[in-house]
Amino acid sequence: DDGGGGGVFGGFFTRHRNVFLYVPNLIGYARVALTIASLLTAFSRVEFSLAAYFLSFVCDELDGRFARMFDQCSEYGATLDMVTDRLSTTGLLMVVAAEVPTLFYPCVGLVMLDIASHWVHVHASSLRPGGKKSHKDVADSRYFLLRLYYSNRAFMGVCCVSCEVLYLAIHAATAAPGGVGGVLGIPKSILPIVGKSVSINLPSMPSWMGMGSVGGAWPRTLSLGAFDTVAKQLCVAALPGFAMKQFANWCQLMGSSRALAAYEFEREEEEKAGGAEGEDEA
Image 1 (cartoon, one colour):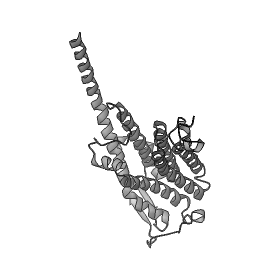
Image 2 (cartoon, helix red, strand yellow):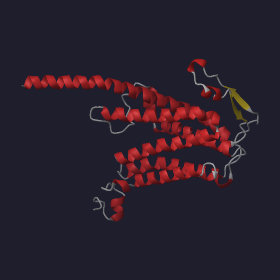
Image 3 (cartoon, one colour):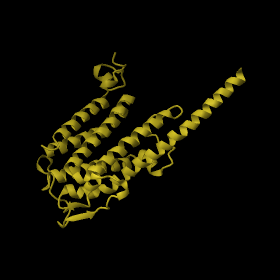
């Protein structure tokens, strides 16, 4: 059965019963393979790793377009996309944490915020009356930034791309300090920035936190070096979008947590209303 699509290929490019072979899901599998290849070569073949991750990111944009084009949107595909998003970003942040020890705790915090905000949001959405068609349905959110993030594809794209570019740029700047070129054909520098070393003094960890050896490992100064390569310059350019993305994640976590807390009382009221109707009928 080709799902009524008119031939083998006609059925393949329309909505059919084999969800696992939907075109966007096949793109999703390719994306998983590219992400694994990128992470496996992150420390040995930097340029290949960057190229593979970039292609994976391109696949993330294509799968949604093909899903809508061929009417092949599915819960399986949406879950595959979101899980791959979370795992690929987590893997890249772990690479950055391994290369730049001073960024270990920030990277762990970013992973925790990313996973927690999306998981809580999806769970809260599933409990709403009638359920939501997508975890991206936030029309009733109290946070303007979150509504803008999910309703404006351009704004969402800038935020998401900025995060990935920042992480990739840190990886490239650390693994190849002299600049990444070769197969990627990237010039060493795109801006006439003076090669002056830059460092940031970080606040000390409060003694009341009692972190022991962890507190002793907390960096006092973060040396950024000179912004004389494309990778380092991209780090700076990506910061605004990165900051907005993390704030959107925080708003998503807070809004979804409020929704989960309110759900308890809404459910109790529904149960009481249902019991009252039963007594009236009796």
